[in-house]
Image (tube, rainbow, N blue to C red):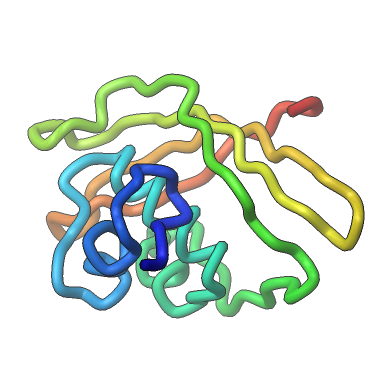
Length: 128
């Protein structure tokens, strides 16, 4: 059984895979954040682009195949619930590049676009 990279303990198919395939939509900003981390972990560029706000979405992504996303820690969140229109999620995303381990610490902003949660942008902290 393949566990979901986002850390819920569920399988990828039961968890973020349902969002990646379009079978389900994120109900909260945190759920979208988790699904985006999982998309980075499995290399799903199409999902990452489709879950990005139209005003900040890049034209394309070029994920580094040498970078492995290994763990996600949700530190905090503000709003972003099922009845909110915007929210933030602060997280630490752990990764490896070769033999080097790293941490991306970000406070991400999410909003609803066409009724669906999307990633707008994030502020990264200099230290993980």
